[in-house]
Image (cartoon, rainbow, N blue to C red):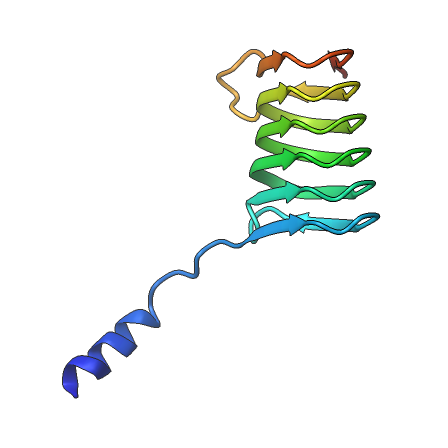
Length: 128
């Protein structure tokens, strides 16, 4: 009984695990607090996602999504998506006809993010 009470009390001091956000429905519009939900997955189509803070990882596998904000890693595998990134360290566009802009790297030590653009007809550019 003492062991059970100890475990219950000890568990209450553990930090809460960070959650993730998954958008699977079409035409969703959300604002994600990256401090609360550091990983975002967008599989639905026509989603509009605004990030506050800097997320760890964002995956867009849906189509016609719009992403705004900052993330350490962004992977776009869907088609005809738009990502307007204030900061990113790693950006990969393997889908087709996507547009991604970035201003700077999240990590101040990097001059620019690592960019992998292996899809077709994607546009990846730096903005001011």
